[in-house]
Length: 163
Image (tube, rainbow, N blue to C red; front, side, top):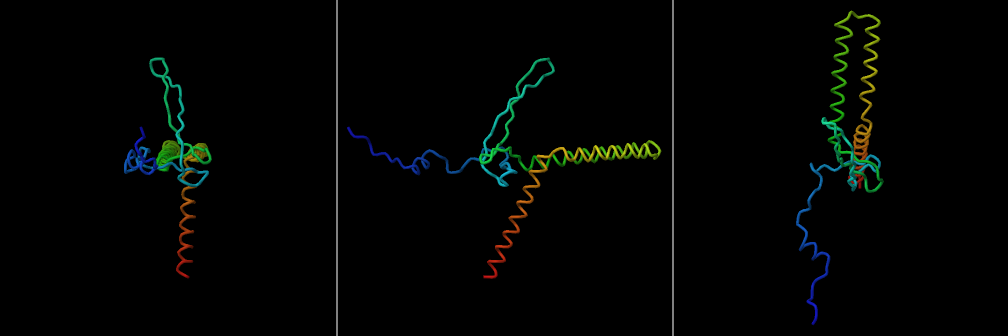
């Protein structure tokens, strides 16, 4: 008995068993940015388990998912999350400086001590803005890469127009 003539072509298998539309596995459709490769590269999801304490005195495991670049292995960040984090930190620092200014210059008379306390709050605020270093690095590398691409596209367009 002979076997039926079945097509063993990969294209046939994909058309038969795969849907027409590719499904994006990211939750919001935004790909994470790799600051090392300067691109939206392919990534692997790495899971990390953290032990947390609950209010009853027990513990539970919290699982977190971090995207890591498939090319270089470094951690990747979503740009929208980085923007939200930086806006939150800047707002918090702004409110801290408003409160420090009110306390140091309105609640107490302006003296050298109140001015020194205000300068100390200013130093703490500057340090607070600098804390989310990974988010700032991801956004700055993305902006510089976009600027380089625009400059390269403009240069190519000028060369194309001159020919």
